[in-house]
Image 1 (cartoon, rainbow, N blue to C red):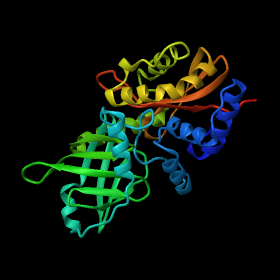
Image 2 (image 1 turned 90 degrees about the vertical axis):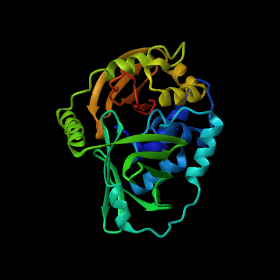
Image 3 (image 1 turned 60 degrees about the vertical axis):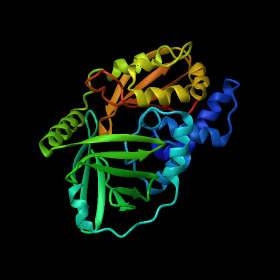
Length: 296
């Protein structure tokens, strides 16, 4: 099964598959396209991840997460997030008030830790990412264009974390250790049992079925994902039309981070689709796809 490290081969496969349908895209466009299908904002970010040979350390949605905003706002935030950054003098002990657990998604926990003078954020089942201070409340990573800001109350205690990445901003509420353990244990058990989360297969079917002749079902998505899907649909549409009607959806595995993966078979090809378990509101918080195999 292909993963993010196969991006260049996937991009070539995509170009060949579209060319067979008389649809032409450039090499650069195919790389950007595959990056987004893998849930990563752009090729530069994905290229850096491939060099580091590790999965994306911040969970992403159909391409990336973010609060609803105009395209111009997102472009401005992307530029800001990618801008060069410098560390500032910072007393490491000041970071202790930020150490703890933050709920980034309905079942996803971010763990913030300090080891001496080094500060880390780690998502469930993923590698920790080191962050560096650019102010007393904002920190940046050097391996990816992402930053985190801590929101504090009147007493200076952290109440939430804001993730800045991919042109979006995602808020994570602080939770206690018992709640974090319950969420992470439940995810670990589901991964070990390789049992899909209720609602994920239905979500994949509801998303894919109308695409050859319609648009994504935005109502099933949480606002940030729906906004991203609307913005990307003009680019994604030729691929979906070329694939044809959906024929079947079969469960493959529960992947790292608790994403359920399915193989979707169409009239003219097959893709892997991953979906994050729906939240308590029934909305989908993350979804992405990639070609299942190179065309024959």
